[in-house]
Length: 143
Image (cartoon, rainbow, N blue to C red; front, top):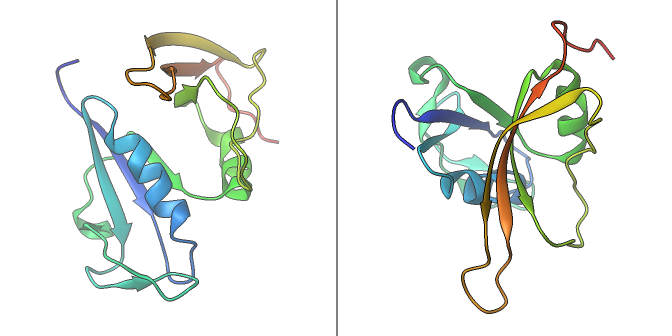
């Protein structure tokens, strides 16, 4: 993949669960042609819910135009989904236990516009796919 990189911003804030920042960062940073920005008001440690200091890489004022804006946590995903027009997803061919999930997307409202399937590359590894979905129709859901 060439051309302009996909610019992704991950917002974090005091009291946020560290995994809601570093989990998405780990996924996004492995995508081809992507630049990930950890966003906060100032370049200074932001303290997680259990006291772990995390350091932003970009302040709001210096942030480039973003293609993707991520605020971690299952409830936030559900709240943001009705406003989304494009989804860049990584789907892993395995079920995992966890406490935060991206909500199911209504396949009647979304169409797949790109897919790149990747096989597992090592024993015990996982096959996965990079998928882009575009919302059907011209409007954005208001629900």
